[in-house]
Length: 298
Image 1 (cartoon, helix red, strand yellow):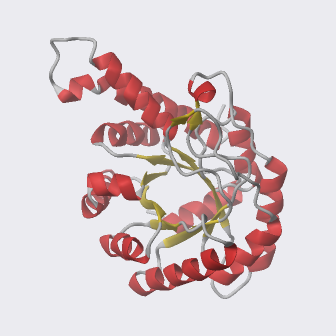
Image 2 (cartoon, rainbow, N blue to C red; image 1 turned 180 degrees about the vertical axis):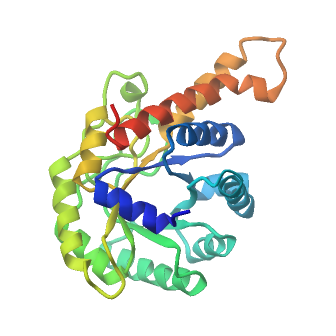
């Protein structure tokens, strides 16, 4: 089976994106795996610090490893939005395939210094772990909100080049019109996020030129965070422009809630797995749709 780095390299060469989907329960995991396996596409499962606290760090790693081993299926685990060295080390020691160290809320100099330290700590534990860093600000909560967070701004190619060359990361998460969470209009389906595709292409070209052929890198990869609620055509265009991983979380959380509400309409049903069945079905449909868009499948 290919490693995560090989999967990402292949996606980068084909200008498609690997789908990254967050979980905090077995229902969502069941739905995501069913979608990915059914389409014969690799997937990344994300667990944020809060989700890891709920699921368990070692338990999440064991779940993903067991699925990969049983089905010989390329499913990988990412420690999403990790903010401290202690949490970075915990995920690395548990056997995560990717770790995102996120200090993007800090000034650039501090973000670079702290990310560089995180890269060193992870490499010392397992040099094969894919390491991601983030620049720019796109909000911080995967929830339904009234208005966009203040301070959102696009990352520049110059910032991106400085960050990747000084930190030694493998994957860059820039701000390119994306945003964490969903506006109420997006949750209702009447409004969508629109990405700056030209900015994605410019950042990708700049960081590739800066690191290709260097001692530690082949191609640089990029991740789109806050993908939920994005215009469908923008997903496909983003992958073609250079996004190698695309995150979807808030859409799945919303589908889970609505599905559970549907399951609870039967006052006599008390089996938990039956109550969440509509949520599992809804999440699987979303993941299948998103994987088609990420991979340019009609």
